[in-house]
Structure formats: structure tokens, C-alpha cells
Image (cartoon, rainbow, N blue to C red; front, side, top):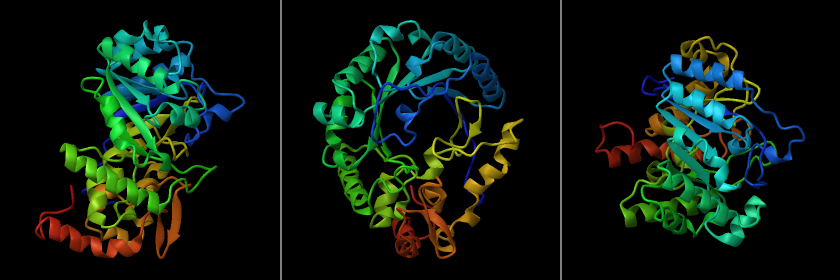
Length: 351
């Protein structure tokens, strides 16, 4: 891969349970549909927490499923706090908030899912009654206890036209961050969002950036050439190199398998050290630029975009490689010229 692509994961995400009390239609792992949800043992968690600490990871995130349903949450929170200065938890907020009381002192950040910012639509997409109220109650509980709050929003077509409402919710919690995310491909739905929808999302995010002088960008590896002009994509999409595994993080499944990200579930086998992990065939295949069409490899935005999502469910065959289905190679051919225009022809890649 080009030397400009730095692969230094610093966050370990541990899926401590597949149990989930939501039925979110956008969930690409469909945990709520599994007949026998897997749960990680405390000893397995401790093993991976120690491994990550020894290999230079600075943050650990408890995720799932719904981590608050994990029966030994307090025990693993204590383990995490003993090894990391930054302990995070992903949560839906679908529980009585007093269940958090014992673990709040061990957490630095709560990342709360917020699929839609309206009561009726949020209930419909999560399958949970009063879902928005429950999420906001959880956010209030975390926030009042000194735990920083971020809202994670998987953007669906139903999100279009409502993005300012997400920001309105964030403003209720001082310092809260809104993190919009791409709806990921899955075995069940390989093409969950259209190019036309992505164009509308990009334009709305761009408008929000301009109005609020903000840096809100859509995460989870949207290729910049999914929209026109490509320069728009460079402004409103974070790019795979800036927020996806294994560039920024690695994930451990409930059964103790190390994987490159939530979507790319093939297990890594060579994992004695982080150096060995990053040289494993599974990781190399996901990172190698030779997997991409040649036109993508010559694009001026490649350093950040990195070709979009590499989930097997998101890939589409092109002339001489495989690429994210949202990518539009015909736009890539003009991207270098756009970068030159934006950066006065010579200052490198975008953003």
C-alpha cells in the first residue's frame, strides 16, 4: 500500500455479548435475530484487554449487542480501567438507567445509538416503544455523571431532511458529539442505500457544515466519488483511512476471534503481536491497494478515501479490481484535476 496510508490502530473494540434488546432494522449483524447469542467470558476479555494494552492501544470500547446486558459488566469495567485511560461503551439506552450506576465511575465515554431524531420514526426503526425517550434518559444519566456523550446515527433514507434535528438533540448535552455513520452492507441487504440517497445526504451535510462552521462528516468508509463533485465527498465523508479498521481500530468477537472491523468478519490468525496482526493475510488483503482498480490507485483523494468500504458485502467488480458499490469510477478520472484545483496543484491530497 502507499506509504502515505498509516495503519496504526489505537482502539480495541470488544464485542462482549450478542444479546440485544432492540430490533433495529439497520443492524448489519442482526444480533436480535440470532437464536443463541454468544457471550464473552471474563477471562477472554481480560486476555484481549492485556494484549491490547501491551501492544500500544490507548482506548478500549465495550460493544455488542447491548453491553449493559452483559452479566459481568462491572468486573470487566474494572479490568478495562486498570489497563486503559480511555474506556468507552456503545449502547442503545434500552434499559433502566439505574443499571449503569455501578459502572459509571469506570467509563470515559458513552456512544449512544440515535437512528432517528423523532419519537414515532425512532420507535419504528428500532422496534422499541418510547425508544427516543429511553435513549435521552440514558444520555442524561451518563452526562450528569461526568461521562462524555456521543450520539451514533446510522443514516438511512429516512434521515434525509432531518439532520439538523440530530444536532438539536446534541445541544441538550454540553459537549456532546454527533457522529453520523453510513448504513453498512450485509448478507441480508448488500445495497442498503442508493447513490441518489448518498448525494442528497452529502449535500445536506455540506449545508450543515457551512451554516454551523462545523466538521460533521459521515463515517464508515463512503468513497468520495460516491457523489458529484468528488470534492464534495472529500468534505463530508471521513474516508476509510480516517475512521475504519484496521487503520484506526481492531475488533474482537464474543468468541475471542480478532477481526479487522465489524463488517469484515474473517478472523485474523497471526496475532501474537500487533506487528504480526498487521502482516496477516486477512489484514493485508483488506489494506492492499492492488485490490483496487488502477484508476482508484491514481486518484488524488486516495490517501484519505482509500477506496471506500472493503466489506465483502459492499464490493462490486470493476475493470481491473473490486471497489465499493457506491463508488463511481467515471468520477475518479477527474478527481486528480479537482485536487489540483483545490490545493493549487501541488500540495498533496484533499482534507
